[in-house]
Length: 133
Image (tube, rainbow, N blue to C red; front, side):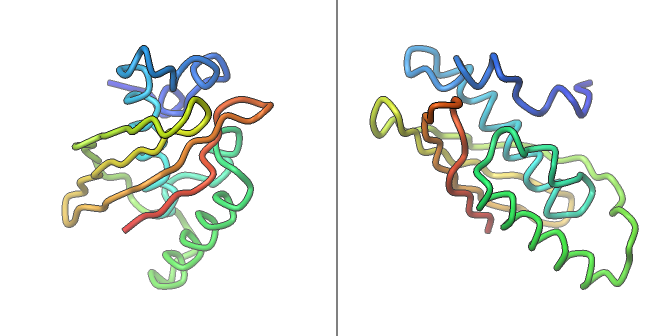
């Protein structure tokens, strides 16, 4: 079983992960970010988990979604953990410095579609756009 810390890409994985010559590594990165993002939106994981991987705008978006979840639930505590299944991960290399990806995250009661844009910046690969449906 994968531990929670193994889901978040390391700096070394970010540096080499979205290499078009190694699509499997890129798929693992997309899976990890997709899983963490949904857990953040469900308010079962802190937003800071992905702070090294996503742009500040994406962190703010995830924080807003988590706050909305908390408000709707009417609780201040964390949501119960659920088993998430990642399916249908796809990547598309737009340029050498831009990769777009999508994934389906299946929860027990619903499925969510995620679309993300990765850009190579001076600090490494970062998710600059993330949409969760």
